[in-house]
Image 1 (tube, rainbow, N blue to C red):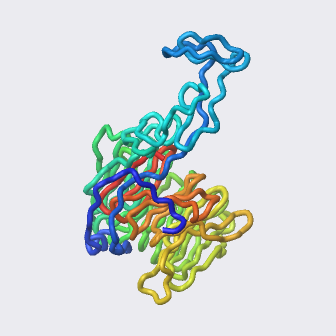
Image 2 (tube, rainbow, N blue to C red):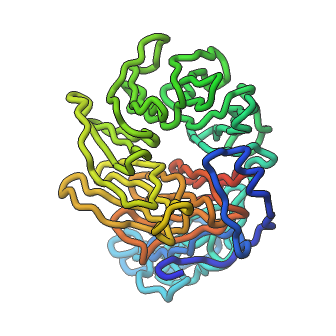
Image 3 (cartoon, rainbow, N blue to C red):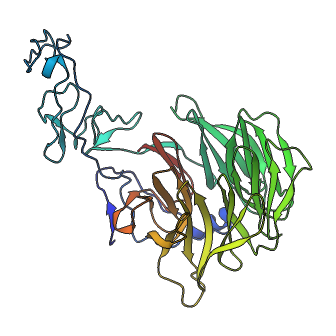
Length: 430
């Protein structure tokens, strides 16, 4: 695939599945036949050329290395000029680095199976294993029913199982990220839960299908379950620490409620937004995509007056949207039933300062998007992979993490990436 880096090294067992079954689970999630499975591997390694240096005269191992301006450093590396640190090697051959105690020698191979220096100095893979300088993915949970939304608090991973769209078989589940405890269902019998978010000790989620359409809240331990608001089909959900924003797709609205939320306190933020779907929020604005007229919209929190950022062409579906301090991002997915639909989908980027719009990445059918301030990640409903690209780059430098099936959603925390397929959830050290 042009402009996409696919990295080899990690092999997981792939599986096949029925698109009809997936339609029953996910409704609007349509799978295309994949031509072949690919090994589940991580992105390529990064060669580090710096590391922490040892101090002159520090005791430690068995080596004694003399350094200019320092003593012999009995039992450890000697100091640099005037007893300071030795300079780390900075011109190492690709795949090597001067890790550990700096001695000016490029003696650490980064592209092997060193669990303490996997791809870069000091990088460990936690419960995964290092292979060819990349951390491998680890299974978090299997036998799930359409995990379409994930959230991490650094200790636990939480997810939504959408279940069937015709029966209340959805659930909210959590598991320790360290995998030192089993998965725990916090609540079941949910009618097609769609989006999950965390805020100040609470879990919030939207339920999209009658007869149990609702915005829900509970504690992180499953206590204090409360229905905050109803609607016709609640889909998107975003929080800013002060308020909750969600979309009601069939009512064509974006709604708002002050957090942590109380029953009967919801208000219409904007109306007449045809098929309002994904929603995102920053300090001053609320952003959303409207599927009915293929537009990306925003409004200031103060004015609540919608303005259009972008409009798509016929044959393009909009689903997910995200924002950081520099850009707004959204997914465009080909509508396979429309004449003239593009062959591939795209990740679009809007510069908040210059108002310029340009493509950032591409894949067959982008589904969900997540940003962490540096990278932009997205799942793909017809590709066995997770994609990412640095927010200031373009598709020529995007990366692909092979998965075991078409991917539903992706999220990250400070050190890990998490993603899901139709039946399973995985994690991987970045």
